[in-house]
Image (cartoon, rainbow, N blue to C red):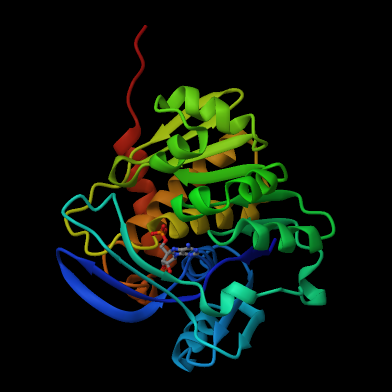
Length: 303
Ligand code: AMP
């Protein structure tokens, strides 16, 4: 089953303690689509400016991402710049230029309207809702956001969340959205906003899923070489949704497996800058790391 995603397609400038890159391929929609494309077909809705390099479009096409919903508008492509200190869990946004996204009014291509799996990647919550409303009968709607929108468009975000089944955000964002520092209490507050499932991404500490039935936690894959965490969250979401859509199952058991696939995909992405690790990644490596995850977390019970 294919996935419809709306999100940013960007040129990123990033500095980490291990290197620096300028105007490289980035964006929440880009990371998500690339990661999900390892599992299923992806239909991308986004806009780029006239300055967007053709080689990046060719890369997305090489991953079989359907680009009929990617338009080119007069003006400049979305740009984001950020830096990380030795604590790679925390991105410092240095600059966000919405550019062509500021006036983007997407009209979904006919072939996207019957999407069953929809991912609202991190972008203006008004735009997320605008896209969602065009989809005829979505079956599973998942969503991501960030401090920029929780701060700047809180009411619009809360409106969008009413239509969301699964929210995937990081721990700081859960606290900020709920205005509550205790994670368990904060999760309850967020679940009362609409989503039935909350997946909290905790960087190198893994991910935790909250539902009305309980809590599930998975660690992150232990890695010695992490170069650039940019896009880890979107890549996680791509593996998570990609797996769910590929098995057409969103039971608790499938969601647990999806969290591990999300963690596996994110663990590859942080091994290099931009999406460079994704360019050489093979699905056998994904499967192999999934099995290693199983060994990492299996232990005997007690009588
Ligand atoms: P992540 O590290 O998974 O949170 O995602 C990083 C990506 O999100 C970068 O490639 C940015 O281009 C993109 N991004 C950063 N800020 C925003 C924003 N306000 N709206 C949409 N996308 C953004």
